Image (cartoon, rainbow, N blue to C red; front, side):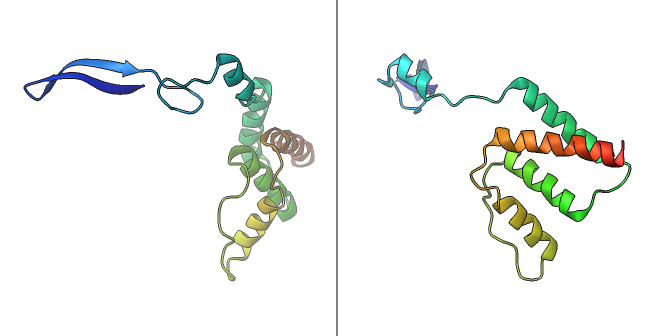
Length: 134
């Protein structure tokens, strides 16, 4: 909420009124009807999927053996797509081979939803847990 001065007395505030702002567009006194606002709201991720994703992210740190490079790139790219979304950085320089491989793996997922990336991440971690053990 924005704060508006109602009146000033000797340079100080004597009354403060909170101006309600629209949660959708952040404009004071928005004229968007409540029904239209609810239709525009983005669906949130299922809580069970977020919990599984968080558990998988913790489990992958405790594998007995480090996964192969292609498996690590798969995990990295799905994790970044699920947490950040589409890639938002420049491609690393010519001599940063590891950085370029990670960037390329993440870049290939452009447009995939966070939910899809989370599901793929969880499935891959479960596969790695069976393969390498915890």
